[in-house]
Image (cartoon, rainbow, N blue to C red; front, side, top):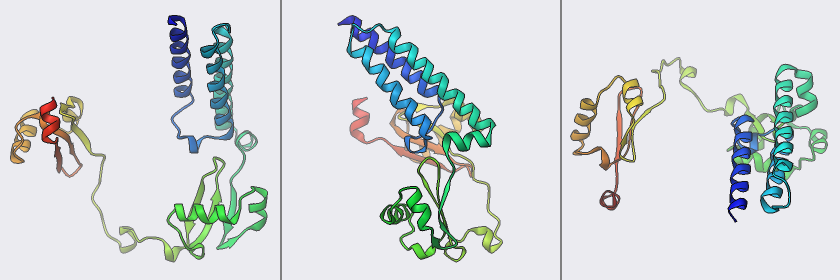
Length: 230
C-alpha cells in the first residue's frame, strides 16, 4: 500500500510540474496540441499509479517526452508565424461586416445555433449588432459590435480620468501582508488607526482589507462565529 501511495505522489508531482512548465492557461484557452499533451500525460500517469506491475519509469519517461514535445512546439509557434499556422491553425471570420459567412460555418462545422449561443454568452443577443465575429484557434469566439452599438467610454467625451492601479490586499483572513503594506507606503500604526475608525481593534477580526490607488481602504470583518472559532 505504501508503495502505491509513493508512486502516485511521485507521478502527481511530475504532472503538476509538467503543467506548470507548459504555462498558465485555462482549459478553454489551450491550443489543440496543448490539450492533446495534457490528456496523454494524465493517461500515462494513471497507468503506473494503478498497476504496480508497470515500472515507474514506463510512466515518467513518456511524460517527459510529451512535455519536451509540447514545449518545443510552443517555442516553434512563437518563433515562426508559418509554423504556428500549421501547428495551431488560423482564426476564421464567421461574421464579416454584419454578414454571416455560411462557407466558413460549414468549414468549421459551426452551426447557427452555436453561433447564436456564443453571441448570447458575449452579451450580444441581437446578431444585427455584430460587425465582425472571429473564431479563434482555441475555439473562443471574438465578437466586435458595430460602432454605434459599442458602449461609450470617457475618451468619447474627451474626459480625463485618474489612474487606477491594482488594489493591494493588506489583511486576509486576519493575517497582515507585510510586503503589500510596505508597497503601499503605509505602516502598521496607520492601518490600526484606520481600523479603529471602523471600530475594529484586532487584525484577527478582519476578513479582508484592501487599499486602492486612491488610498481608499476597504474593510470587511469576520462574522462573530468565525472569530469565536479562532
